[in-house]
Length: 112
Length: 114
Image 1 (tube, rainbow over the protein chains, first blue to last red):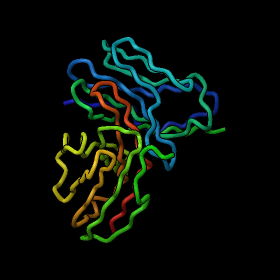
Image 2 (cartoon, chains in turn orange, cyan):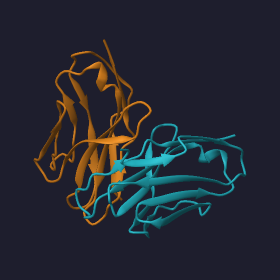
Image 3 (cartoon, chains in turn yellow, green):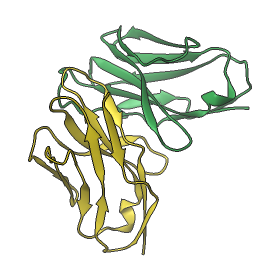
Image 4 (cartoon, rainbow over the protein chains, first blue to last red):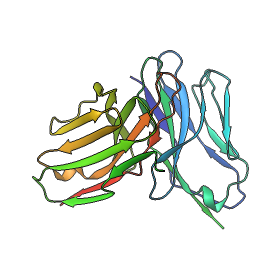
């Protein structure tokens, strides 16, 4: 079945550090890939997405590239801020289904 | 205007009780969902409804019964609550179309069964 594996957290960084959160997936065909973010006490919000191989999704300084050859969709940001502290979820959506399959989430804490 | 709203935000109840969580979306979406997030933050789909019709039921115990009176509402009723039902339950909705659709989530209902 379809699955998403993302790096175990928590991740703690200082402000302005470089962030990478790894995400790999298992799926048949060509799923769409997403990163969702959950700020403390809130629901999930879409951060970025990519719908086909080599697409790059980007938003708020975050970016991720859909790599079919490595089945990966790693999230990166060049300089994190305290306000980026949240839980980040990688997810896939298989073509023909509306269901999102989530990874286990990675908690990021950014210290001033 | 809150796009996807669910009530209550917090729910503490005893084992064996029956409780409901309500969800409403004002986005005009056809599809609504319930997701369960456990204590380790793992998020998994429970149900999906499209225009009041059940589409996805992910091997959820039949103590959980979703009800969709219209396409803007998807309520979750839970019978005979158990300790393991303690979790955060998220309602979500998405626009028509199957591929590449963004899901919009409510703020969650933290259910604690004691």
